[in-house]
Length: 354
Image (cartoon, rainbow, N blue to C red; front, side, top):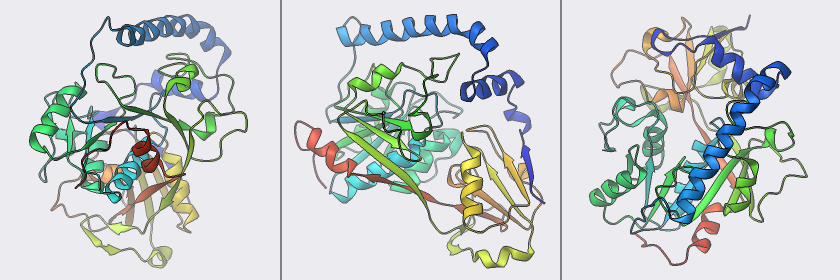
């Protein structure tokens, strides 16, 4: 029997209103649209004025001494951006570029700039930056001011030749040399998208006209969707499931046939994770969907012979815990055509190589 739960730990409860609005974003409710549309129009004016203030020079933006490539989205999360950032960074590294990563570090406990190291925890850096740091090995720094994070990163790693700013499309206080927007395939054919709070857009669709490239994530784009002359597509490939406490040990999924198996995901689209496991032939007796970026501890895991979690959730567990029954499903994004090659060709000068 497959038991599906929306589970919220004590410190990560999602108000019911948020759930209602998020459902409204996917399937608009006429009554809610009537109430929220005026607020979205106001939000649109504020967002447009803020961007215009930076573009016109009325508000100052800072330029770092190395090229900055921003990878972001006009959605309020859930576009599959993190695997795309990891794939871009890895692609640049393969071409001999010394890459650094900066990010806000959403969900961390401190607002101070933090340059990640081997001892960094999710509460220090945020789950996604920590995952990017561990997955790519690229020097990484987080801070509410991306420029300040960039300066700290370059001070700690002066050999960096290029910085990738994770989720910084709307952070106009930092100048950028290349802008890449990630857009979910599921929304490419929709005509009912709107800005916050009536919809889940941070900026209007017209913003895509000014970026250098658009990466469509999670499937095929609608034939009518071509906001940029530089269109890319990404798909997710799953790797081999490994033991949380012993990453070199891979899971033989055939062993799970006579065991109870639970899956836990604290990501924006948990069903994608659950479907990936089912597509691997794994029968899930229980699924637990946590809010995106939710704190998770051993006590929050369901009682099962095997518990499978996302890489993003795996970084939240400290080493040394007795969690031999917990396994991790790694994923990677395949981007076509070569996004790293496009980025290097777009830059006005060649970054420093290793």
